[in-house]
Length: 490
Image 1 (cartoon, one colour):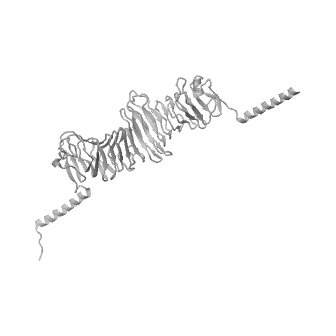
Image 2 (cartoon, helix red, strand yellow; image 1 turned 135 degrees about the horizontal axis):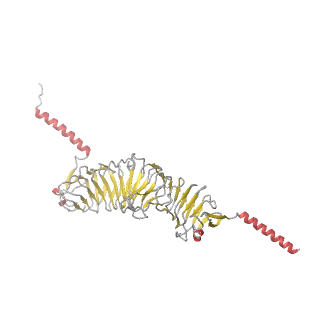
């Protein structure tokens, strides 16, 4: 007998199959077993039942939801360290802030702001309980700080969405997962963000204050710790931003732009023996407030600048400065147009060709070496505030403006290394008044004494006779004495 299936039975089976497929999809996404807790419109501590609809306090299996129930901006404390399955932000009536204090451990659901209509702020510390994704809607930001930390204990954080991941003052964070097209902002003087994944593809990195740390940097458009952006922005109004490179020898054509309204910003290479070559430009924008503002290059590693470092283009610009810190070497290959002071606080400032520094830039040697490498360089005045060296290399020429009015530190010495040629290697001003007598007394050249400036301002010195010459003179003197005694004896 033919088994005739009723329409109701067929529909039931079809519906069951569809439900099974839906449940499987939900399970794969991690949402099937995750309950939710909806935040009430109040500022009650988040560990209290009165803070949540139905008194359901979020836990490791619960996603905390911030939606239209919140009619205005609110601030609430965790009340105690807590563990939530995740956070979802949809359409609250204002920015919600979890205030500082305690730690919030987040599970695999991470932070979902993919449909958020407002920013969200977490000032407590964050610990990952599992690998997770933070998704941020375009034109929205997830702000982390103040004085908090992000610790990837249970798994890596990755990001998605076209919004901004904003690390504020005091935040110490490491992001090990892939940062997608999310913009990254570092904005706090004590903020340190380590971007640990070399496959990051975000296109907007701004380090207004604090530092961003990474071990892989590539050409523009290629994934790296610092994303793929062509231009990396450093500094802000009254702020200082730093890129800290911790990797191996590499080259990048990216441009680095410093906000001239802020204090000095820069690039540090931390590993000795490794060199970061920058073929793009390092430039300054906006108005500069003081001569102390500019670029700082440092670290135990080396930096080679093939591009140009130029002045701010803003009205009221007083001239971008360059400071060399650390024990590594900063090499100028590009022709630099900045006119502010060039300061060497340690390591070596080297030239890759002649006339790499603007003639209006004064050189301040607080320590370290200015290495000409056999090239010629014309500068402004020279100031010596610590034991320092000018290394001419073979055939190098250093030309300074009249520096007699510059107050050198009287306890410091300036050593001249390389091939020194009396009357043609080092010049101060246009005549013999380019240095004072006390300044000349602070200059030391191995094998020379009696330093002076000639009528054209060139440094002259007398070669110290070799010990053999002294011995020969002494021998001649002795023979003369013997002959004299013999004559007297006769």
